[in-house]
Amino acid sequence: MEQKTNINALEGKQDLTITREFDLPVELVYKAYTEAEFIAQWMGTNVLKLENRNHGSFEFETSYEGNVMFKANGTIHKLIPNQEMVRTFEMENMPVGVQLEFLNFEKVTEDKSKLTIQIIYKSEKHRAEQLKLPFSYGLNMAHNKLEEVLSIQQ
Amino acid sequence: MKLRRDVFQAIADPTRRTIITLVAASAMTPSTIAENFDYSRQTISKHIQILTECELLEQEQKGREIYYQLNPKGMKQIADFIEPFRKMWDERFNNLETIMKKHQSKLK
Image 1 (cartoon, chains in turn yellow, green):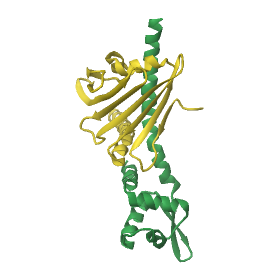
Image 2 (cartoon, rainbow over the protein chains, first blue to last red; image 1 turned 180 degrees about the horizontal axis):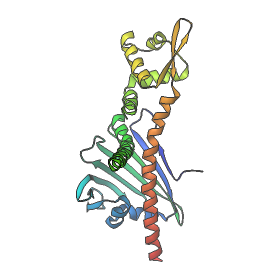
Image 3 (tube, rainbow over the protein chains, first blue to last red; image 1 turned 135 degrees about the vertical axis):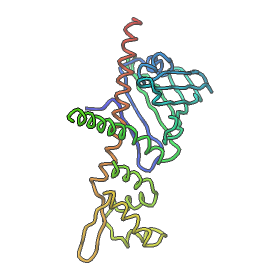
Image 4 (cartoon, rainbow over the protein chains, first blue to last red; image 1 turned 90 degrees about the vertical axis):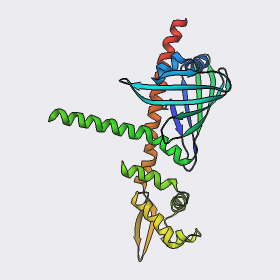
């Protein structure tokens, strides 16, 4: 079965490409990326600031049980409604650094669309840090779970 | 975890990446590998050692010579790294799809 989300990360490069096909009109995918209400829902983050225009900027903040877990910010360099967005994205205090993102919104049919995101990192090492994130996160979760189980048994 | 992090450190170095590419084409002895570089034989040996420790290369004894070849196990680890990242995005986008479909049905 073909996967809906694909990652293309060639060895020795400092960029990667994410592609995804949606059972949604392109306008709605674009909306999900440009309206605070929807970003908050699908990314599970608070949108502190969002200026949808060329040279506008944004700030996201994610909290868990009252503590700020994660902050991100960036500048929107270029915006063409329902077609294209070029922006920077930076997770604060993370070794990934600033990344440059080229988002392409493409209409496939009236209710199908395709999103292609090319992300460029400062170096291949920075890209590796990004790839490692969900991996170590998953491992930490498993570890915490294990500790939980063990402490209950005691 | 330590081992996997090492795999990434191993391939972050351009010389080691070149060694992987060379050995991928055919198994080689350390001296054949070293001939491809301007560095000392000792420097190359160090790189080979790191790659072997990270299980990216493996040794094979052929007569009196030791040959190095790719270790499929280590190479698979690199590919496996991408999978959690892909899954994370897949879940996020599934979320986006569900939320926007709900919104779409409200619009109709």
